[in-house]
Amino acid sequence: MQVRIAKWGNSLAVRLPRAIVDELELADGQSVDVAVENGSVRLKPSRSRVRLCDLVAEAERLGPAAHPDVAVWGADIGAEGIDDAYSKPRGKPRHAKQR
Image 1: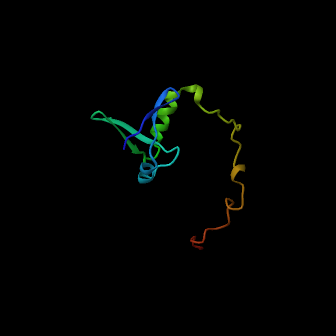
Image 2 (image 1 turned 180 degrees about the horizontal axis):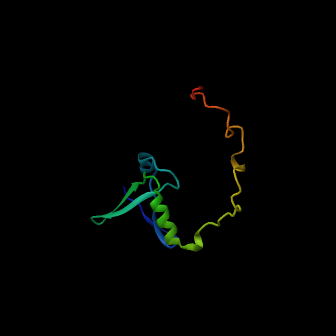
Image 3 (image 1 turned 90 degrees about the horizontal axis):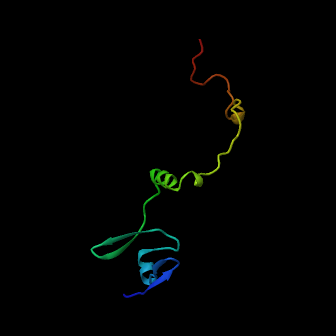
């Protein structure tokens, strides 16, 4: 199957025919891995999960200007964050033996 290369912004793009999209179960916005092998371009659906080390590397590459703002909640005061019925003591544990 032959397709044409078209300009897309500052890049070049190849439009994938519907038959290929259906066969590979591709979706709009999905990531694909692109590689050059023996003078050919190979596209492969990217099925890998995002890894923490990749996210950290990308954050370091983007630099401090891209870091999110830090929310300042104030100093820790005590256990008010978990003051609910579930977290309160309920008396003696059932497995404790009485003497």
